[in-house]
Length: 109
Picture 1 (tube, rainbow, N blue to C red):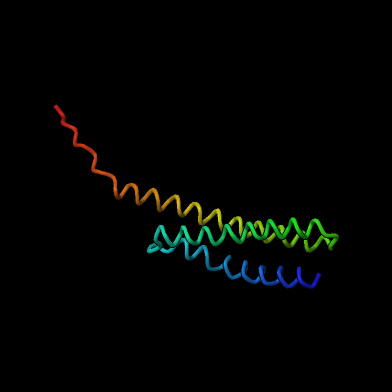
Picture 2 (cartoon, rainbow, N blue to C red):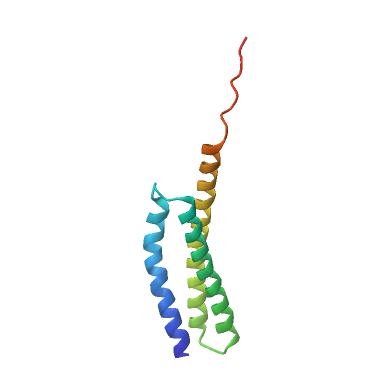
């Protein structure tokens, strides 16, 4: 059980730090599509790891609080990953718009 506690403490600390930093990072005007994409992948990997951990903790007869903590951390990482995914979509749309050919001029009679 000590191993699970150590892992959950570490993930909880990371989730706390990221919960403060990620929203500011995603709001940064100079954020590139590549940076946002890498951030999304990073956060999604952590969310997937927490889902796996929650399944493992659930499969072992441990205190419910550990399972609830793993589920809560999964939600935090999943929410952060979803925010990053939205930013990626926004930046892709901006990039596509910026690279689109100009619309043809319409002649008025």
